[in-house]
Length: 280
Image (cartoon, rainbow, N blue to C red; front, side, top):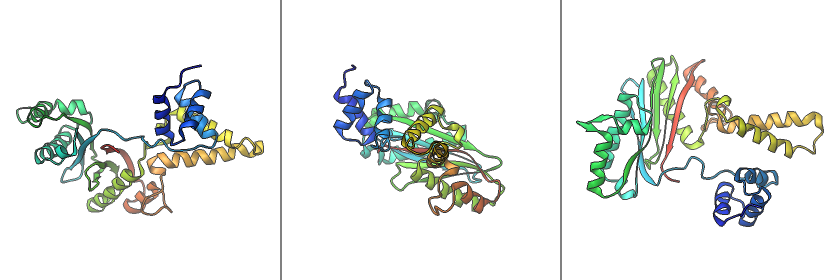
């Protein structure tokens, strides 16, 4: 039998929220396989969310830049070691410049953005100089840039500067109306944390795992209705993670797609989005 260490138990507990002994037993039953242990806990009724999913980086800030015509924009996360540095004016100026640079260069890769030309050098070299001056590690955490000639790009940055989202939507709607809606849509993304634009983007293995869990849950039901129940549960699963299928945060009687079309017209389509979060 595989040795079950305290670190393995701690990690499983952080993912599931189950008790220490439940986690230890689940790992023992799974022969030390963490993924199987998660499934075992859920099948036995100890269902929880993976609380740490999507949480990243220690300290820093997120900044956006949207072009005046709202046809392009970018979102950048600049990370550091302490919140004191994140509130430094020099750090804030550099972050604002980095967001505009990402938009101008259409850069959605942190390493590539660090290598982009900036004030006679590169952004990365400028950051190194700041690190030497401040004495604390700083880096480009993430970057996302969108251009949309057939619609608009919008964003929302939470008041703490640590959570933000950017979204690109195809629409023939009015710019002012679209900009307002895209801010709300970005706000929805920040608080609802979708992971995909379509069902096809959800990992097939994860879907199969969910299906197996649901089949376990309904195994006592008549065989002729098991599949119907499982199909309904899978639809609810997709509605939790697929952005257009999520319930609209401002009116849960509508899906995100329905709210989008109600505001910007039939055929309005989300073409891309990104959500960044600093720490927990």
